[in-house]
Image (cartoon, rainbow, N blue to C red; front, side, top):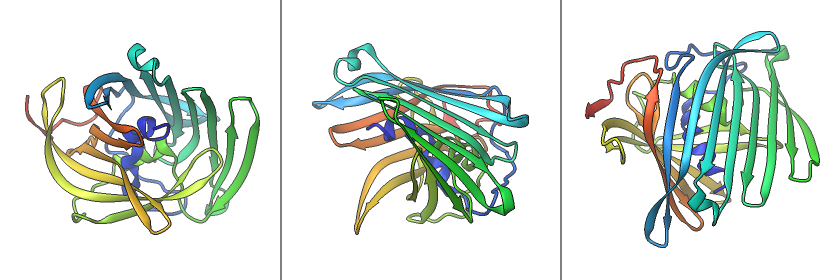
Amino acid sequence: MRRYILSAILCLAAVCAAFAQCPLQNTAFSAGESLKYQLFFNWKFIWIKAGTAELDISSSRYNGQEAFRCHLITRGSKRTDKYFFMRDTLLGYVTPTLEPLYYRKGAFEGKRYTVDEVWYNYAGGKTHLKQRFQNRFGEKRDTANVEPDCVFDMVSMLLRARSFDPKDYKEGQRIHFRMADGDNITNEVLVYRGRKKFTTEDTHITYQCLVFSFVEIEGKKEKEVLTFYISDDANHIPVRLDLFLKFGTAKAFLTTASGLRNPQTSIIDK
């Protein structure tokens, strides 16, 4: 659960094409956007409210450069804290053309606390990454990598992907991408499942959605770890997430969305 609960809201980013430096025009969001979610766990066949998640985007600067700042925090409820304590925070800075600059993930889950960081620069037309992993004892492990093509983290992946237009995707199409974490760069796969309607749990708003599945590959085996629904409009905001965990199933539903850049044309019923 430690990776997928906090990152599921971000995983749609894999629909991006990879190329050095990766500039892309932002058409999906603006500073001031805020998205809020309610989390649910299936505990012994009973669905319980498990916590909340909130994502906010603002204008900022990073090392003197104009940037977007994206902040995501996931909190478990007092009820679920008795079984599994969770306080996760993600922070990312990207350029106005959606190139990643910095990423940080602080994960406090159960008795485990870790911090992952990634710093980017693009000297010589390549992606240079300085990466750091810190465990709960404060011990740090630094690595450095140079990639010929674009690499994303969880935050920059989301922001870039929201400006991508998947209208030419076919059901079952597989999308491969590279993702950086604190001390690793991994190959990931997304599968496009098509278009579906979805009505949110609390607000009862019906959306027309694009559906994707995140698939984990281990050797020759594949395991579906989450399915997510994003609004089929220019905002491309996640409205539903289904997570398949070792101990059960979790879901996240959008409850409020404010400061959106574009009209919510994916809403077909309120």
